[in-house]
Length: 563
Image 1 (cartoon, rainbow, N blue to C red):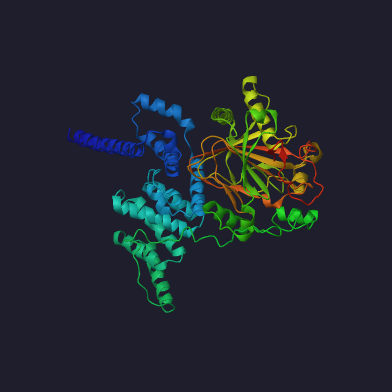
Image 2: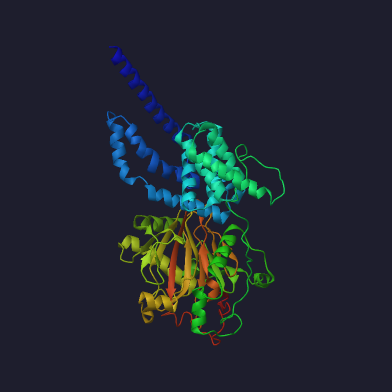
């Protein structure tokens, strides 16, 4: 009987541990769900990651802790399990948050406490749920694996100090050791040897005979002694006691100037370039290197450029007008804003109704798949980190009740752009979630693209123009459309559309139309693309008498401006 009583006590203790674990997890989940609007809650980046991480890690691990006698819980879990995010989703979310860090210059500490948007928007209205130690350690390990030592140090710093503040993991726990171990190593690799030794000393207080830690300390001491001879003394700050010590994980401002400087090609200074020179420009072989282009992209996503003298000369040409030059637009006038005069970038305000936008999103939702790009060498479609979104094509072969909405929107596109739809592509709907982006690119195809993809240009011709429609509510932060060679920044406006020509009147690419979609920081962004092709536009966009002119001046038709 004594033996049975002992076993019963051990069983009861294990049950208490199991139930305490389940209750702790339950309270953690509930603590982050003090919201009235689930969609608004899940639009925030830290909340998105916490939900994804919980399903991929915690809920799967907790299955083993649940009593098989609770059939309702087990049945519900099994029915939902196939829809749970997996580790690939966690990795994608980590990459998204690192991308937001890099572009919007957001420190790990801001994500850790749940307010990455505060710095960007100046408000804490959208505060999210903070990260716990396990989530912070996931970011630490990812940065470690990518050998990004400053990011690794910054995320480990947050995890280390959260453990100290909450006491969730004590030094005898393997999580405490792993976090501190990564923190020390990443500090060392980032060049912060004294701070690395300080963390190692703290670990040795609890693991005094650990051979690797002792070896590390000896090496750190030798390195520090050698460096003391080469630098003056300075006041040292403690990385153990000071959680605000800067780990320099986001770097400084991008060292690139954003100014509008016309390039040497038709429409800029009347110098006609040959085909190879234009191809080299589009392929970044000569004028704009990849590094400079990315710096411009990041800088424009983060802040508006200063108004240079060249840009100031263009500002006086900005205007708004009402377009009513077709029978339909007389009944439903098109509100036009000239966002930039050359290359001409137009905004059509209130381009569609809320009902149309909701319908198009609902139509596209079940068809969304990860967006792909053409590999320039093989011509095959593949995923790429420089384009992160989900895409659906709205086929014209739809039931009549659905097709009539798509056709109505197509007719409005023709009225607004004055371009024929006969040689246009299907409407493409894109959804950009957390960190979703499309780095700088051109919409028109180069001759190289056409050769590799084995397309027949005589069938449709190149993409002469782009219409980009923002459908639905805009993102709460981030998600701007930028033109890297002009400094134009356009933030999504509900149900508005942006229009520009990709080709000059002589058929050459307009090299000032390189554009990008900045990462979504909070919320989600829905856009619909329509690409018009050059064939069948002979009467809608005839060649200019001056083949080198970029655009024909806006003309009047019955007292109204046209495109």
